[in-house]
Each structure stands twice: as C-alpha cells, then as structure tokens.
Length: 176
Image (cartoon, rainbow, N blue to C red; front, side):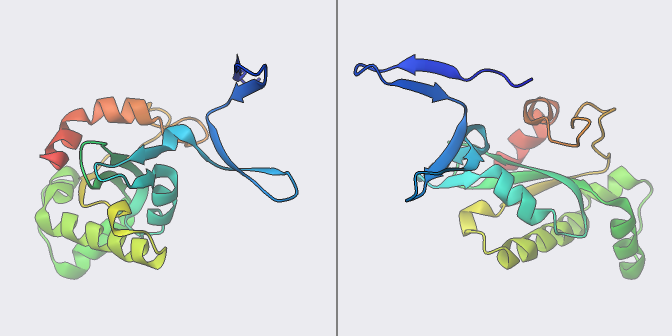
C-alpha cells in the first residue's frame, strides 16, 4: 500500500498533489518521474547534487560493497561513507604487501583510503559526474551493511537517516 500524497487547493481552485517526486513534462503531455525530492541537496554555492545518481555511479568501483553519499548545504562538496568489499580490498592488500592486524585497522590506513578514493574518482569520471558531485573525502567502513544491522532495508535500499545518525561523528570529521 502506498502513502497518499498530500493534497492542496490553490487560490484558483486547482488541486495539487505533493508526492515528493521530481518530474518533467514531455511535449505530448506525459509526465516522466526523474528523481525524488529527498535525494537532491543544494550545496553552498547553489549546485544541486542527486545523491542517488552519484551513488549509482560510484557503485561501479570494485572496492565498494555499499556507499552513501552525504551532502551538506553549508559546504561546497560532498562526502561518502563506503562499506568496503572485503575480498577486493584483501586482494589489493596482498599485492601491495600492506601489514595490518585487523580489518578495521586496514580500513583506517591512509593507503587504503587513498586507493578506495582514487577508484571512486575513476568511476565518477567514467560516469561524467561534475566535480562537486565527486566526494571530496571518504570514510572507509569495515562492517557490511545488512538488514540485520538496520542500515539497509530487506531490499538493500539505504536507510539514510539511520546511517546518518549512526555515523554522525564520522560525517562531522569528514567536514572538519
């Protein structure tokens, strides 16, 4: 069952429905839904970032198991939380001979963050994202996001508010 959209009648008596979708009308009168209002953030200098579009592009990185891009209207760049793909990162580590005691330590190493970020930038350029859409800073996370952790739904869609609250300190450090 879908939630009913909010209805409003304007001063001319025209009824409007507010669904949270962003659409575009074609010449033949058809309405095409192109995004969700809640997934678009206006940055400090007026650029609009579609979080879902950026995340979809960055999921092509071999190091990414899951990703959440975060944009703050008081900054001119976006950041990302990256739940890393363990096998790919371990392959990279074995090829480069990086020593670590546990996986969470590996994810916090500068070399790891630089390599994962470089792969994100490569995917972003391949998808022709604008510079302001490419995350300037990232946090590499060792734990996967599963429905059991409560960070994604059963359909593996991001629970943005919960992720934002869970990693509030990490996001604040990325913007510092």
